[in-house]
Amino acid sequence: MRIVVLTKPVPDPAAGQERLTAEGRVDRAGSPAVVNGNDEYALEAALKLVEASPDGGEVTLLAMAPSNAPETLRKALAMGAHRGVLVTDPALEGSDTLSTARVLAAALREMEYDLVLAGADTSDGGGGVVAAGIAAILGLPYLSYAARIEPAEGRVRVRRLSATGFDVIEAPMPALVVATQGARSKEITTRALSDLDVDGATPGGAAATAKVTGSRKPEQRGATKVVRVPAPEAAKAVVDFLAQRRII
Amino acid sequence: MAGALWVVGEATSEGLARVSTEVATLARGLGEASKRDVVGVVAAADPSTAAEELARYIPRVLAIAAPEAADRSAAPAIAGRLAALVEREAPGHLLIGATPDGRDLTGFLSALLGWGVLVNAGSVEWTDGRPAVEQSVFGGKLLTTSTFTDDHGIITVRPNSTTAEPASSPGKVEPVDVAPSVELPAVTLVEHVDESSGTVPIEEARVIVAGGRGVGGPDGFSVVEELAAALGGSVGATRAAVDAGWIPFAQQIGQTGKIVKPDLYLALGISGAIQHKVGMQTAGTIVAVNRDPDAPIGEFADLFVVGDLFEIAPAIAAELRSRSG
Ligand SMILES: Cc1cc2nc3c(=O)[nH]c(=O)nc-3n(C[C@H](O)[C@H](O)[C@H](O)COP(=O)(O)OP(=O)(O)OC[C@H]3O[C@@H](n4cnc5c(N)ncnc54)[C@H](O)[C@@H]3O)c2cc1C
Ligand SMILES: Cc1cc2nc3c(=O)[nH]c(=O)nc-3n(C[C@H](O)[C@H](O)[C@H](O)COP(=O)(O)OP(=O)(O)OC[C@H]3O[C@@H](n4cnc5c(N)ncnc54)[C@H](O)[C@@H]3O)c2cc1C
Image (cartoon, rainbow over all chains, first blue to last red; front, top):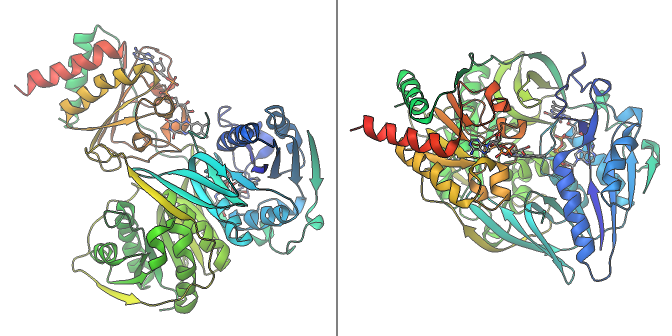
């Protein structure tokens, strides 16, 4: 079982220092980077699948990110991934979701795999659209929001979480699977843009299909009222508060 | 119809996804501001119910029958026909609800059409001949406004960011026939399982009482349920509680779960992690019960009760019952 996991380095949400530059891009110099949380879940799922596979296998990380990304990807390698491929090029800075999908698809064309695993969305861009774009470009069967991934006899079956429960869906491999929660249960090669078969005019900020035109801070909620009294009085205080706000 | 604004409606087993009525309401406002036509489009094995429902919100709805979607995963099954219709009719922009199915479809359409995407719009205005999309980023710390660099684009709209209002007079449904521009690989639907609890879905609930890891186990949720019943609300949860198997995923609120906007959000034993906060921070009133006075939820709750939820939640339920007589 050969699995490629799409892993995006993102500013650490826990550090809480995310900022945009004047051009409306993430100020990557200003915040420590980590592997996107959902991609770590996908990686965990990949490692389990390889472990459970009778003929073993290999997990490769694929990222499109700035040249300092190896530092961030090392942690994912330490989790047990076998190798990493980093697509990096100054021309990729400011890429939008569409060019990201095109570049990652071009990189995947040069790799061999039974499954590609992606995260449900990222903690920075948060579009949740890149993986479907890749599947459309490569003509791969696409199985998303997979809480359980079961490969068998050349096919992969997943439990896709839905708004009201789940669907069991199935397709032949190779396929692209977007892992989500419940899926739980070392070397980096650098590729420049020119190493890949992708239209050079496509990626990067210069060709972006959208641009940020402004930003503002959201309105703050009012001050927090703190109650720290024994339960019966606390309950009265809560109910009074709700009555005062006309909720009850 | 060049330059029209299209609302791509999401068909569900019940009819039309609620988010599509919100997107349609938003698009109607944009249509007035931009003087562009607003058109709905629904593609499904049987699109009729969803299309009729969407037509309560917009004047014209195109219904594409995609028989292959009956026993397949929806987004890959309908994307080829939708892309072909977009190429034929040449609308300006597509607006799609940012649900799992909506995001999948957006990724496909963006790649098939070569159109850019602005994701998770909280509001959209029409400025200088283009849509200006406001997005809440970095867990709600910043609101950015973005626009497309050309005359096309797909906008995904965050659930619960617009209040749906039907149009003053209902529109018309037109069945249309269109062959897929490409056939994406089929993904077979083997089984559909419904786990919904029978109460009001949390995306629609006016009152939500949510439980986190602090409720301690599946039995602890009876405390949450009791208070929800006393308030006439629905039960929500954090990922920690869902991952532990105490409650189904359908009740999860947050980045990977649902985005909710109730009048009252009452949190029991929830720390208030950023990934949870993004799903509930626009609630009208936030009340939190937590025994840790330094829990992050105390920073954005309106009322923060420091104490043991197993004492306080039943006391609130009792107080409510005694006041209602
Ligand atoms: C605050 C903010 C807002 C943005 N808004 C937009 C917008 O509205 N429109 C737009 O076009 N771009 C936007 N971007 C840019 C966008 O983040 C990048 O294009 C990004 O490379 C991919 O989009 P995403 O983060 O939304 O990925 P998603 O679609 O959320 O990613 C889904 C999955 O795809 C894989 N993946 C995605 N990117 C990579 C990568 N670079 N390397 C490896 N795997 C990857 C991961 O497995 C990930 O979990 C925004 C960026 C920021 C920081
Ligand atoms: C990529 C990614 C996506 C995620 N998506 C989501 C998501 O969609 N939704 C989500 O919720 N989380 C999500 N998370 C997880 C999130 O980061 C937190 O881990 C989670 O929200 C914590 O849940 P909790 O508040 O229930 O648990 P904890 O953080 O463990 O908090 C429990 C709280 O209960 C309190 N407590 C304990 N006992 C009592 C008692 N007897 N009385 C009163 N208080 C008590 C404690 O003081 C503590 O504050 C995501 C994480 C990642 C990395």
